[in-house]
Length: 139
Length: 139
DNA sequence: GAAAAAATTTTGCCTATAAGAAAAAATATT
DNA sequence: AATATTTTTTCTTATAGGCAAAATTTTTTC
Image (cartoon, each protein chain N blue to C red):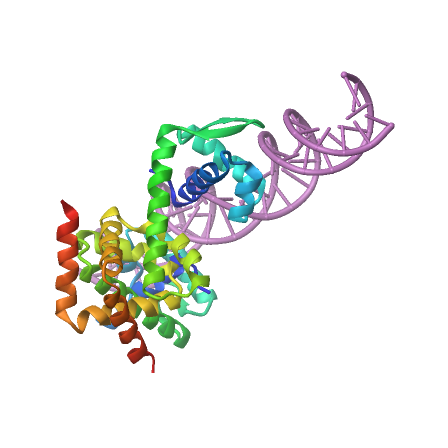
């Protein structure tokens, strides 16, 4: 099982590869706001655990295992962003909050949040009712 | 700012004091499933940061700061448990999931989850509609 | 009520994870 | 080929926990 920190890296690597076709140490460092040296160390660990194939100085690619995990992580991340957005959390908090909690929820909870998102998406009235509760509540 | 781990300790100490009037190293160790020596170390740190007053071998009490923080942490914990319960997460996952995420949500998100819980609590029909979505979704 | 035994707490030292800083190595650019 | 950029290595730091031995307190027994 990957640690939370490993998951952060796998997720970002997966996203970078999706969007640009490759992932570089410096991109990852920038995205996660850590030093390149920390990235190198994590990449070596992810290679050891077979989430990716690493050749030093040359780069790395995700293994099947890495891709599969990455896909789930991205799905989960997006779902949680949707959820926080729907319930009205401010944009500037969403990314950090998702970043913080995504590694700590059971798949059971993720599934239930998925249902909840569907519940709101399939009937706009429900979102409006929620906004009503919020409005009433705030004063 | 307390670290997540410090928050765990403050929360448990607060709960123990609420329910029993005092908190012992061994109780905390048992609850958190760590060694007593780890508890002692954290208690010393919490004393240094003025969340509690510590006298070695004799015990400790929460400061005003510690009580205030503890109260908020317990409120947040209970809110998140309510939330997961309402959306239908299984009992055996709730405690761990809350334990995992509670330290990583902004108060903005906590407030919005609070509204959401209120939304469901004030009209049982809404919970039933959610269950409908879940049922439809599962097959 | 003092001595011995048991339980609790603390200290000290070690481990693991993850990150930071600076220097070294490899690669890319001009 | 010289220079600039990127990546890696090495060493250090911070947090938190594990384990064993020592210190202290509490309980039991006589």
